[in-house]
Structure formats: C-alpha cells, structure tokens
Amino acid sequence: MATGVTEEYWRTLNEDERIYWRLFTRGLTLVLSLVIVRTGWKYVDWIIASLMTVLPMLIIDSQRAYSKISRPLRRLITKVAIRTGSWLVATLGVIYIAPQTLAAIFNGTGGMVKPIERLSMGNEYIAAAIFLVLFALVLRSVIKCLRQLGYEELIFQLPRRILIDVMVRRRRSPVRNFHEFAKFELQVLMGSLMYTATASAVGAVFVGLFTTGL
Image (spheres, rainbow, N blue to C red):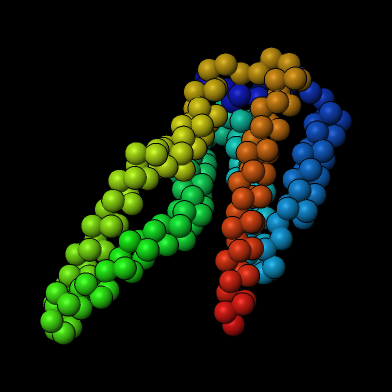
C-alpha cells in the first residue's frame, strides 16, 4: 500500500518528539497568521487566517498517516487540497490583475467617446453598439496579451502542478531523515505563508478603497 511523503519517518518518532513538532508547527502557523493577516476588516482576517491554517494542516496531516486513511477519504483530501489550493491562487491572481486590466481597457476606449458620438450621429443605440464592439476588441487584446505573458500559467497551472507533485508524485520518494521531513513540512507552511501575505496585502487595498468610498 502507498504511504505518504512523511509517513515512514513520522512512524520513527516517539510521542514526545511528535508533540514537540506539532507544538512548533502549530505555534509557528498561529504566530504568522496573527502577524501577517492585517487587512483592517476582522471577517476578512478570519477567512484568510482559517485558510492558512486548514489547507497546510490538511496536506501535512494526510501525508503523515496516508496509508491509515480510507481510500475514499484519501481521494477526497487530495482533490480538495489540489482544487482549493489552485483556485485560491488563481482567484488571488485575478483580483490582483483586475484593476490594471480594467484601467487598460478604459484607457483604450476612453479616447474613443467623441469619435463614437460623431459616427453615431447622435443615435444612442448606434453609439452603444460601437462602444461595445470596441470594448470587446480591447478586452480581447488584453486577454491575448496576458496569455502571451503566461499569466494564466503563473496563477493557475503552476500552483496546480506543484500541488499535484506534493500530493501525488512526491509519495513515490518519501522522506528518509529529519532534514527532509522538516524541509517538506516547512515548505508547505511557507507556501501558505506567501499566499497569506499576498492575500492580506491585496485585501487591505480593497478594504481601504471600500472604507474610503464610504
């Protein structure tokens, strides 16, 4: 039966060592979530902190006892971790690039207002139709540019491949010593930390804009 990435080494640790390591990783996660998550809106902070805690815990704990978990639950954990992780990063990437994309679109169409008015000869329906066509063309150009830059690859495909490597392929080469064990689990935590820090920064900007607008 297949084992988790850290399962074989985890078995070699006694209960005292397991408790110390759990306290260290849980304490590290708690401290980092309290320090990093600062959007200015407590509900957003709770959501981000919860994601930072739950997803790494799901990956780490499942790899420690992979063979002891039933097959349906193993598949469910793997699917949830891969889909949730990849979509969270993709959502954050979309939110991050959305203001710049909208600015580019409006800059591209904003200068066409007066020419459109002249072409439509004062007819609002014709003006609206021309504007929609131009808006669609500019939007298509922006999307094409983002694809050529590999933005979709960066925010969705790459995170998904990393999670598949962690949850599926990496099990073929389980860790053998404490260095590899600590490296794997801390990498999972640091990946979550980087996502949380970026999500907090983006969230703080949007909360600030919302508060200012009020």
